Length: 399
Image (cartoon, rainbow, N blue to C red; front, side):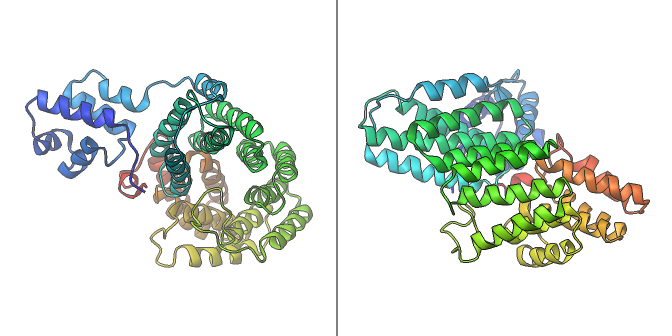
């Protein structure tokens, strides 16, 4: 999918550069950026990071004009309320509706490989577009398609906010997604809202609430749907965090039955289409959290499948998560030195999203507690690549 970026940024950058009488190469020399990278920013072929925008502001003496286009303060509650209130008759063609639904699928498919801070502005722009169309006039069937598209975009936006550790924004957009799902009578979006909320509270340590939300999602979502399956996996992970190995195993057995004959979906990378290949990765995470001795074998098997060459594979974020799971499993097996090495590889990949840093910190704490010499390298990697410090390599692989 071609990157979807705000065209105002490229136009503003070009105007500022030309006003200073600078060529792309000259600006690149001043800003320590490649000419091709700057060209892509101006052409709208690449989304700028907040750090890049602020740096170019300084170089061009733009007074924050570029940064304002990237990380301007957002009233998340107001945006969410506006979308909900716009559910009224609108005027839109069938072709436009088709393109919107295709864009929703494209964004959901980009989620596993696109950095959250780059995906967020794309989702925001599509939500704003859908909201604008809801001001016109359409048939009830066309209106429902718009509302469903808005619901999917809102729950995706909430998920990205969770990855960025922005709980207030995530709550606002989950509420909006739930309202839209209710208006459109769409139980799967409602199920995803509950499952997404379950993941958020699980990362904050409220495991009992995560179990309750996961079970609600299973009740709401259509039986056997992707939301139902994902919520089942989420319940197992919450039980594992509470140390309830027996209940963890029981829910994992139920998950195995759900995915036993599940075909690989079209566009398996789509965040809201359950890929049965994910089941092994979820099992590795769950067993590692539960302290089950079989976790190491499962995690290694998943890594061989995901990352056979050791370069992150096609799903580098999932590979990084599995390495953290393997680290926990190795600690449980009494090999903290190996755990430190594996976790360092995960952290140094630059693919651990903010909402997963608690897992990296947990491995670090246990490796340090064990007194393994590898703890120093892992701590150094955490300090270099931790939240707030974006590795340069991430720009080249996003999207």
